[in-house]
Image (cartoon, rainbow, N blue to C red; front, side):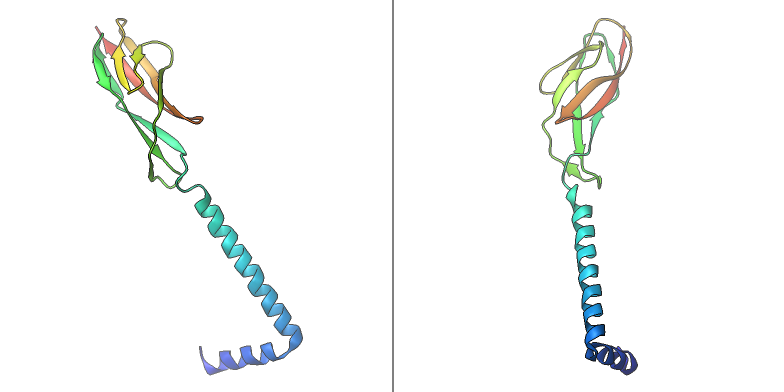
Amino acid sequence: MTNITMDGMVRALRRPRNRTRIWAAIAVAAVTASACSILAMSDTGLLASITVTPNATLAATSTRQMRATGLDVTGRMVNIVPTWSVAGSGGTITADGIFTAGAVSGVFDGAVVASVKGVSGRASITVTP
């Protein structure tokens, strides 16, 4: 800091009324800064979304290992153990994520679902004859 700035600060701090205002401003700035950093970090590491892969094309009755990746709000990976299910028809899936295509051909949008505590992701399956 320059001497002019330093002299101005010293003069301001010598006055009791100014000193109180400066300390109040510092306190408000500190509380605001800490609140912002807490809010920014509060969701980091918590599951925000699940991506299910692959969107696959399978022959009827064939199998494919499905994968689920959990992400937090910043896009960082979060370890998850999803509950697997099939929405509608198109096939079946095991607890380990192995999908078995059904005998009926068609496009099954969002058929494979991975869920963890209310957060879910989906993948589409196309079954060919």
